[in-house]
Image 1 (cartoon, rainbow, N blue to C red):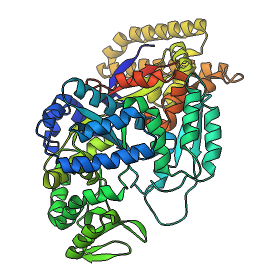
Image 2: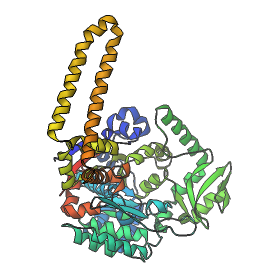
Image 3: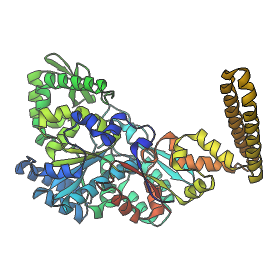
Image 4: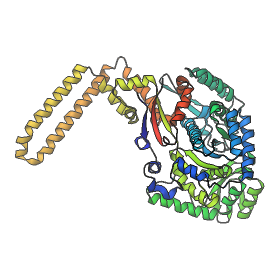
Length: 537
């Protein structure tokens, strides 16, 4: 099997706005400030307005954070480069268990490679990974799924009692030790020992979701120089206080513009990714009730446990900015206020909701980065390669669904002689019906379509009989069922793309650490926005 590149439009379940962004940018250019190219990111670097005082303050915080996570020399050197004038290529994701789904790793690699290419082309750039520690959806981060021996093995930490709170500081708890032991057993192959050691060092019961994820990524991407950023740091909130305050003070105008943008998207045939109402604000309050959405009713603002007048809210933000956090649409703007960002690497849903975030960029930050669609991969191991060849199938056939796989495998399991006989006899019947065409259409020309319909039905039923014969032949051995399960679990687990469902680690362990570098090379600027089918050992 050769490595193949596919456009996103050939993948199942892709957001229409993301497809237009990649395939026909002119259709959606009114929703984005820049066409998605690294050349535009290079040009943006020449006009970037980012004060040195903020640069130095953020770099100092990043250095402290990354040293605490055990970052290597390459990351610390990149922080110095950032402090001395380098721009940032940013990506990010929730702090999922064991690194979360594979696309978290692919985002990091896309940022690393894009920053490397910008630097190679004369624009000093560093990769930064924004750990979404402020997110309060614990269900998003407390689980991961391994592919092991053809099965899907889900690790899921328990929910913690209490009010909704940012996931970053929450402790993993004693159950994670059991999961680490089980997971490391499944990491067989050239990189299994290295990955197991890194998991054991990062994911300990007393560690937090943020700390474990950060230590793991710091170790895994040590040679890549990936800078990690934890936005929960109160010092970063203080630096970003002007954005929080302005978002509150201009809530009315911002919301009006955002509602108008949503209508523009709808008129263009696209759904808004983030729901907005007349009462929405872009802020959360970190109060006694956890992370509470702030709503507005005219001049009054209300969270579950607190209320403010407009002036009181502005004063509260100034006095305690760490008590507030941005929603999904404002978060990118806060990120790019804190960082000298020229490009952000995002997934399909992110690219879609940035069309809404553009309102905040234009009114609050007065600049917007180039948005790049992350590279994406489906890794096809040696057994899956053999099975696809054996049954004359492709990965796309598996994406068509379990029923399509069932039919393909059944048809391929019929003895060659029987297959030939069925085909020969079906052809005879087809020719026989052809012979009837003339006499019957002389009686009534409209009966021509009835003959053609009969031919199609016979062909369909013949193929269906062949498929059923194949599965009947397999009843005792159940080989086909095992092969179907293997292909579905690896290539389309739970009817979802592999990169969204499976953790990368078991596959990387079998491939070897050189696999990270191979994936990085396929995450370059010319490859971003494509999906690669990659054969691995």
